[in-house]
Amino acid sequence: MSTIGILGGGQLARMLALAGAPLGARFLAVDNSADACAGQVAPLLVADWRDFAALEKFAARIDVATFDFENVPADTANWLAERVRVSPNPRALALAQDRLAEKSMFRELGLPTAQFATIDNRDDLIRAAPAIGYPAILKTRRLGYDGKGQFRLRSAADIDAAWQAVAGAPSILEAWVPFDREVSIVAVRGSDGAGRDAEFSTYPLVQNWHADSILSATLAPAPNSDALADEAARHARAIAEHLDYVGVFALELFVKDGRLLGNEMAPRVHNSGHWSIEGTACSQFENHVRAVLGLPLGDTAALGMSVMLNFIGELPDARAVLAEPRAHWHDYGKAARAGRKVGHATVRADSAPEMRERLARLARALGREAQVVPVLAALG
Image (tube, rainbow, N blue to C red; front, side):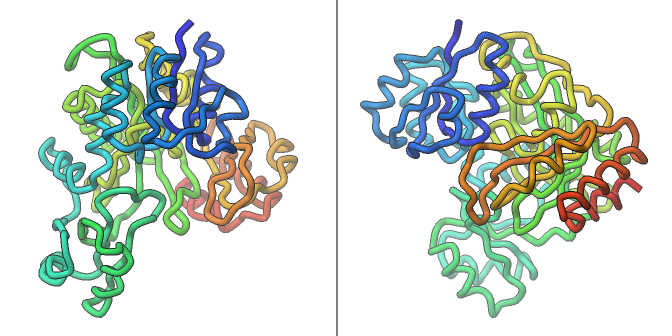
């Protein structure tokens, strides 16, 4: 029986442990918070990312290490890789931590992006802003997720406020994309071969909606997206092979005038793949466990339609979800806090009319009609 060590003890680690237990896998999570929610379902080691004495004990107890959090220091991942197999590899983690390196890789591999410029100081920002144009987004190169480390510039008058917002950190200035919709694709690559010989699969392309820069809802599969899905899968495969990636990752994309633009990559299981727990034969979490253990990958095809609703800050009444046929409730075991992902629900259906009916009924019961309005519109 193999033990998987997870760097990070949040809800993603929790769901990995729940998915891997039927496969006979054991887990050990490490997190710097004693109340990390993965500790409710798996052993938890409380340690700082640079407490190498504690991490030495962690490495001695596991067969392979993985991540539920992409901001683990790359030097920690490299240190760990000298002692135990790490999947995905530290190179993939380090690249995904740097927005400039990430965007540059996208372009190198043929995935278009919004126009961007490197910003190392205030003078760089002053020079780049007119060339990029307004509006634009200033993002720290590192340590940003769920809208953190970002500032939107609407005019030159916002330059000083933007520079203060990123606290002078090395950044990237990106042109604002007036996208038609946001989509993402979750991919998984096995450890059974090299290059194109390694097993590779993608989940269906999904459409996403955000509120305050945090994922609010996901519709799977994305409507009217067969050609886009094929293109997204090709880009995902190119990235996976370029990085010699093992495990699950997500590629976040904008659709503008029928064209895909690369936004970000997440080197881990992803919020926009949570629907796969009930919406596929083999969830993103189970497939990640399979990949890092060298097991054959599972089926990623959608079983009908799914909508995932994220719960941010506090949970609604579970009974309203559980009373709805083919709705599924996920409580992450976290204390309520503004801006915190505390749970989600997934609704299943066999057709768009059935999904509209179920989703509208559930939203009324939860008092969340506004959250589902764009999803219902996408369903037609």
